[in-house]
Image (tube, one colour):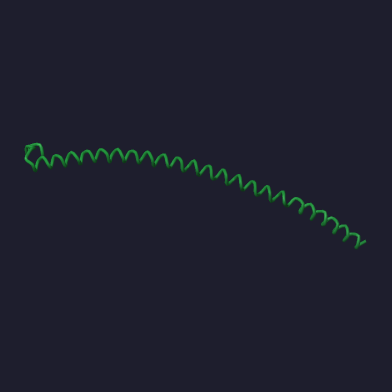
Length: 96
């Protein structure tokens, strides 16, 4: 009777082992697909975040370019004013 119990336990364990072994590839495939799609969503989220950052940086760059253009115009005006002053064409009251 003791031997029969051991045989029954061995048979039950073999069945459970076979069930686990046959289900293992499906479990691993499910885990792999879950990780793959999670990475896709994370990548898409980071891509959208990078696009927003890029748009903000481009807007900031455009602002600085317009400021630089205005400053270049003012520098050119001051240079011409200084040149005129040294050539004696500008009255002293205009340059302060």
